[in-house]
Image (cartoon, rainbow, N blue to C red; front, side):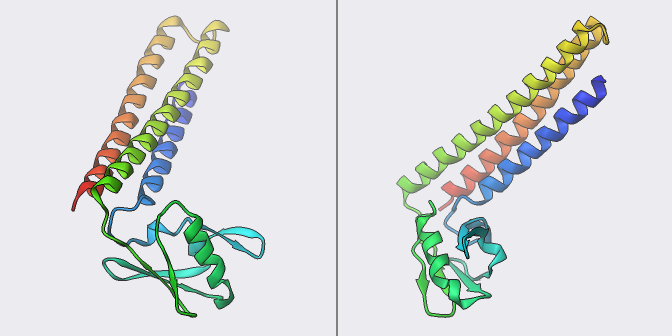
Length: 185
């Protein structure tokens, strides 16, 4: 019972860390990367669809993304979706492809992006604390029902705390790496 609870908590913490990693990939760093726009949702015949399911995204130059849709009729919808996104990028359309130049980041924009990274990492920490809280609540119920001893409860409590510390440190490291990447000129 204890092992099941801890295993489930660890799996949820692993997924929360993976979500943070993917989320941080979408934050612009001054270099062109397909991950910047892959998750932009495009209104495709009334259905919000991720851009990477509608087009090929390539990086021909370090500061340029080229988006080549498989259906040329959705060029306008892709442009609108990119403009609506919080990327701050302006697409140019030549009728066949969309070119997305990535401008050099200003110092002010770098600081703003670093704050966004801190905020996302803190959201990840909150998710970890919620997972820990839920697991502890389950363990307390097991103890209350006399299915586990008090000693087992405290040992499990220490193990869930060490799991939380491990994934918190991992999230902090992801945040530090992304901030270093953003602040790099």
